[in-house]
Length: 166
Image (cartoon, rainbow, N blue to C red; front, side):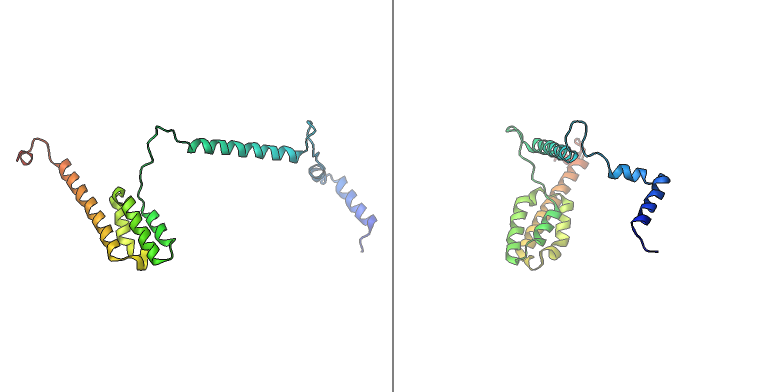
């Protein structure tokens, strides 16, 4: 049976009679204005602009530092060293940046971070893993390990022991 306008009207009447169309009618024919006479899309835009302004205000308030506040502490992270190595393509640049990073952050590294760098330096640096870099990492590692062992010995000895009176 071919569809013509009368069969389509009969089809619509069938749905209107069974009241299944009413929710769809309400959704498709909702008013686009609220009682304040502003279009809904205008209020939506204003809402998101206000939200963005609030977010920017909060973000800028968090980044402010007062003049009397101390400078942020230098933090060593093996993942930073890895990222530095993986993001530099040229081997000479990678070696230079690794030397700079070790001189800047090496002394502040914790022993576990230095162990990660020591064990993965060949993989991370590739051809930039030269003897000066290897010796710099090993030297920093040995210094940290020695200072940690001295600290452990100092903590283990009681103050009134005979070993301390020599």
